[in-house]
Length: 390
Image 1: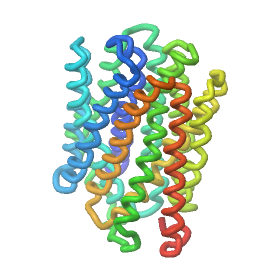
Image 2 (image 1 turned 180 degrees about the horizontal axis):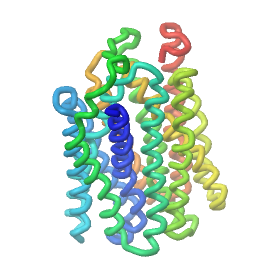
Image 3 (image 1 turned 90 degrees about the vertical axis):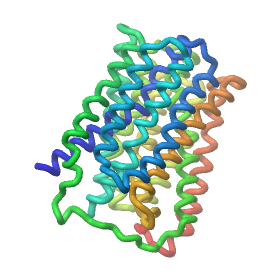
């Protein structure tokens, strides 16, 4: 019973936290109009927000190795939701961004701590466990985009932001009240994993480079997809929100499958294949195709974006086995957040010069670079570890 409660808290928390990562992109077309921003200005807001998450992911990830993780995550939820709600009470762009930055600090507390907790309490079927964890994140974000599509027709973006922040307040309170469940598990399901000694720090750094290239290309396109659909394809804000939700529909369908494939084939193989597949689909999104064709492209992109979560989580735990769990995952989330923050800023600056369509095509190149580095890393580690070592 306690384990079921722990799993429920963990999965619900992941869904609530992932809402924070995509709440601003969902509202971006309206925020552009509200504050009369250019693309680089919109990208700058996202960059500042995600930059705050990047810095504090490492700080709080390392902190989570020595303090109560559940309370750290609980207060993080409350801070994030509280400052998002506060941001709706102001009309000044500088104050709005300041509130968003503090919210980002709260957001950063979750992923490093929860990944470390999962790794410490899982001894078998790591891919499936991480797969179900990532599944509930994609379910929440998919639901958010669908709901926002309806709400855009009825209310303004500020009430939408408030409503999307409420789950974080509830989850934060539950983590503080019932977070001790995270520390209870059956003895046979708990394992203190020892460093294997099979991987060097250079492997860990190269893998972080793979992650950064991958997210640099992917997240800019995902963040600007609603804006692209409204301004270039000419659909309504509601249709743009529903269409963007297809990314996360692909994720929730494929992520559990990807988790099983990690246990069967090995996480490296899953990550390599999905990175190779996603590159041409990103390029195709920037070909000014009709809406129905774009939706067909978004589905496999979402599958490859969210579906690599289990593989990435397992590899970080193994490649960073010589350091604290929270610290290792803190590095991962920090690198992802840096890529998240730089990506929309660079994308916005380029889009102001050459347009959204050409910029999307250009951003398939970082994904190609990620595939090349990953292929090199896979080749150099194979002799030492065999087929499933990574």
